[in-house]
Image (cartoon, rainbow, N blue to C red):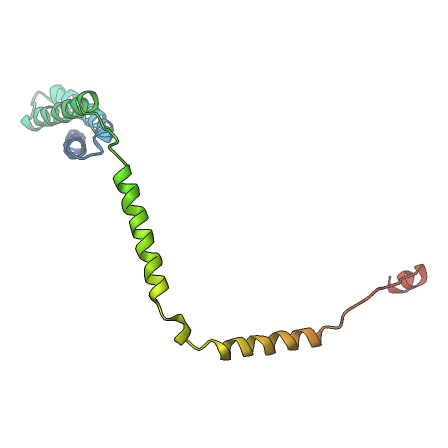
Length: 147
């Protein structure tokens, strides 16, 4: 049981270190807290048996380092939105280039006449197959006969 909690604490502390140096450093709190909990349980179980391993102390060291890096980033590093006018200008430039490319395409060379003729034939067939109903008159006798 002691080995299981030691391994879990070590894995959680490594994950906390990895998350703390990445841009998603706020997520390092969760594996850091779990590493402290698992490390505390492993420390308690090893103290009960009388032999405290150095790896448990190492996991505490890693976890405290990860949490300190995370808290430093949270308090002192500010994320700022810079000037977005440059991005907007590039976006409009890309739109204009795309419009120019579409205008330069030679769409007239593609023959669509045969496709339009086949569509006209299909629509004419469907119109002739279905007769139009002008009006329907029903009386009570016809309704009773249907039931």
